[in-house]
Length: 111
Image (cartoon, rainbow, N blue to C red; front, top):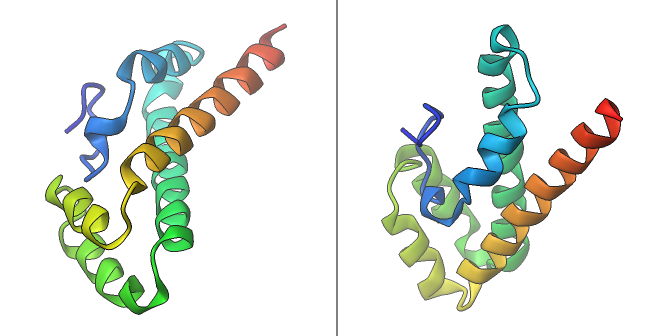
């Protein structure tokens, strides 16, 4: 589990949890569980899309199987890095972009 009781994922160590907490603070207590789940889903989808865009197609099926069965295992990043050098900083950038976009939209909504 992550710092906010989100499901664990192989990319957890790439996430800036302070930024996630800033996003969650925009929701009322009764909305926070659903907001956390939607946020995790958005991050997960963004990472999956980025991985599939960077990873050679020959590795897609194997990665998808690993992601299904070992989604929580941080060694999956090592597996990815072996097949697509430099993917870790790319994923960090993607995660920052998604979180920044969500936070910006929430701030604009509240203005």
